[in-house]
Length: 155
Image (cartoon, rainbow, N blue to C red; front, side, top):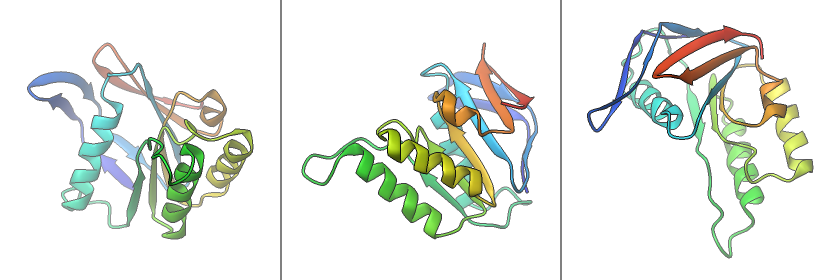
């Protein structure tokens, strides 16, 4: 289980949003949504910073973050790079898997593969995504709107 205490998120002194105390339980797939620039990735980066520093006392598992990946010329397509990064994270079997826009560079076949991986994942998953197909897999939504993160059950 992961418990995130309520707080406010700032970047460079600018208030992005407030968030309530939120929990993630084993088996949860959480979709983190909001307009571009609202602070989704910043929130996840701060969460990872706290997890690395072990300042979140109730989480004692491992986590993996697969960041939004931009294609690199001559090393494979964006989809190949993204899938490889996701496969590496899955291979580590973390208690918490965080995926930032994981379907952005994936073709249809790779998107189906990703959906299956998420469906079968035993641990906690947080997805930053605008992909409606992936959002059908979540059981909770964290939505950022009007400088507030709100939590909703369902997809």
